[in-house]
Image (cartoon, helix red, strand yellow):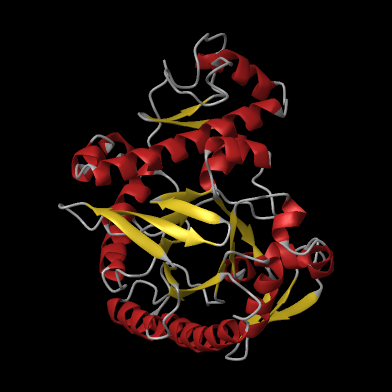
Length: 379
């Protein structure tokens, strides 16, 4: 499923090509999140123009709305969303545990109430595979039990045990569907922040020979140093022959740590969510376009940036759009942030191919101030 084209001599960073049903994807790759079959504030044409070939959808949200009957009537998500590239759908596990009301987990599956209308539903590992097969997902994720930072060992151990049991059932269901379904199933390694549980989870998940593997339960509120330590330990447990996906990261500091440890794929809602609130990414850090210092400023969000926003519009104008509650403000800032991340990961890939990744990573040291929360001084 992945061809490795280059490796960095000073780290585990690697550049490769993911081979997926709707076309190849160069890695390392950031994947924009389109929870409800849309990346908020941008059109599919915009995503294609920025060079993205793989986006995300969410099983929980799409199952609830518009519902499976509607999606099946279109023959799957690609036609429904008018997206010609690849789609990765996550299992909905994280959303069930963070959004659903009165959820109850057992070895059989998870019962939950919709956050939309309170209606009762249940997911089993097999059902989640079937749903994503109906979506026509190019990559689908196995149902897992998400756990948060700070839980005790007993709770983490139970989550890891159920995740492992569900992985077996999901894998078997995916194999049974292989004649009619071409998408790939990824298993998810859990174990919270306990090294022995991480190792046990990796051993169980890797033994099933999933086409790809993901690390879950990171970037969930832990200190950055804890994230780095657990990432390094966990990534080293994964086979090099499979694509590696770290769920839920999307700023340069976290991306560089992921790539340094051999991760190929990552996603996060933060870059687009931040954009809708007026926060723009730059190579020196983040800026808040709503701030008064940008009033009347006749320069782009970032000098020399070639995104659709920076080619034509000024900071002063975009600030005016936000202050006037005009929808174009979030649209332009979202385009900028997505362009930034696509360009950034392209530069990361180039640095690996040229065997200078460590030097490149050091050039982004400012992003590490405040664990990626650094905001450029605005005067």
